[in-house]
Image 1 (cartoon, one colour):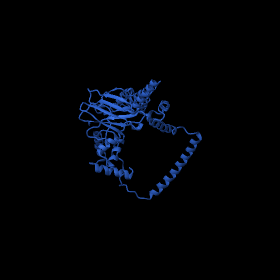
Image 2: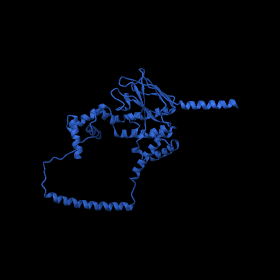
Image 3: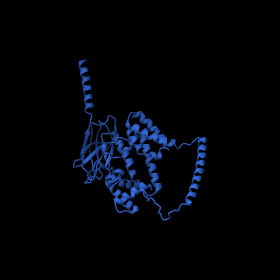
Image 4: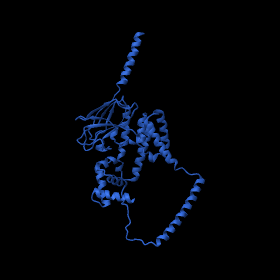
Length: 359
């Protein structure tokens, strides 16, 4: 009897020791060219909408990278529930405050992981390539092996910009979303399945695929009832359900009432317009006043012009819009040509006049 009690005490002591010493540990080898700093950053993904956003306030660990590309990051400060984390490198010219996520190609500088304080994982990049995480392998974590499979499905899609024909582009996007739905449905890990749905185009596909999104909401409620990501997901669904319900058909009596009000309003507008026309006939007009026209800017150029007006540098613009610094410079050159200006100050004056006049 005494021996049995001693054995039970030993078992409980070992269990308590394992809990008390729980510590996540990430080791690996990355490809480190001179373009990259010899540091590796681990940051949390606090919201589903921030899946691809680099925010310095979310950094929880910074590790050193050795000359051979090896690194180690470990700690015990993670929340108790498993979550998404991002492991990434920063280029030499950047800091943690203007870090950019580069997707695809030789500059692909990040991966997503699922971690908790018990995770022990080793990562090995393919040394035959140049990007930091090229074709990396995962050892020691089955959820992250699934995450790697998901990344192999997602990241080739970021070459969509190279597709020349609209129909080919549309079919490629549709195929990616079908593949992501299929992956989410068959994947046994709920967090990895959620990541697959996060990467679908919910704005475009919610109405026709609403049953898939709603069905997965039930799975989240069962598997991760108190998780922050579950709350994020339901907020997304509520938003899209509200958008859909706002487009529902009106009752017949409401449609007739709206039609009558519209006719009445139309007649009132005609009367006011006729009165205004008569009044203006007696007022001389200045035919020499040029009509102000808004320059034909793209949506990206308008964003960049606004940021120039706010005094942002090219690096700050690249960081805020998540594009390359060279891309920012190309947009600015085109912007100067359209605005017929030579420098930033002239562009800022144009932006100020557009904002003040509401053109």
